[in-house]
Length: 420
Image (cartoon, rainbow, N blue to C red; front, side):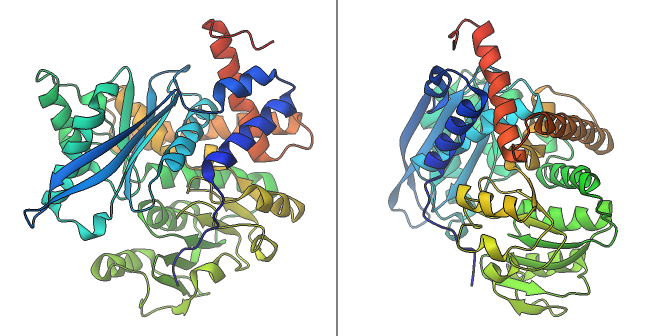
């Protein structure tokens, strides 16, 4: 059994969380009015030739939420689940994520509704270039800067950057897209940045509850790029023991711990974690209920809901996915005294390293990782101190409140509104 989620609309969840934070801060309703929806949403029809010679039409999106802090910034995902509300919500979360991380970028997100697992390399290239032909007019290094996301990668970013260059006068603009191959100015360390930032955040969170990560048990729900690196880095950086992982085809469990590098090799060879010979099968939903120290929801939205939250037994949940916990589940987890490191901070490593690339910092992997660590430490400690000053606020509520204060003040300074 694979990943499951509820039907709660992520766009409505994002809106409600912002509205709640505005009310908790006693801000003017005008602040919510300004931030409750994106500045622009582009929906494009992309028609390409398939390998069969037939034409096929795909729907693509680009949502630009807010650029008060800087150019819109956010990934492009290829998935059968992509829709307008999803990319709008993700662009809103990106705005808030950049504000929490303290980087001068705004929030954007894009996607194409397709099944990349059923497409050839040539079809993916045509689709990537077709997307840029349709939405490139709203992109640019000082306007909107895309990056990889679910089922996209540096190669797809290279095709998109190349298409942008050909469309707009042949100008070489490497800053128009981040997450590129190293040969095109990509940043060393970008591939594992989301997971690495999450591990750094877990390390800081563990200190606040007195948890020694050396030997701590870990479960990873979703073994894509973020999940597999979370498992590997939790083992290598934090000394954790990875006892359970899952992907879209099912899960596996070994209470004694697994060799993560061997598991990654198995996943690359077979396309799934299931069938790994040094673990027993487990249903992916059951993984969420294991009595572990650290749980990484790393797959899709809404996997922890009011229905299964009462059975969650982790001490720390680090949201590597966007929106994996529903609002109703949040209340239950808070009562159980489970520390949730919210997505606005937990998975900000990707956009932080993308910011380094956008700045064109020519650092090696070690320096990129060191700079990311410093950013996460600063963001976590600032947020934790802020939370303690807002008595009764959860870490997530504090993240939204802190982000909104920074955003509203920036918009006020720019003269967009007084928000009195």
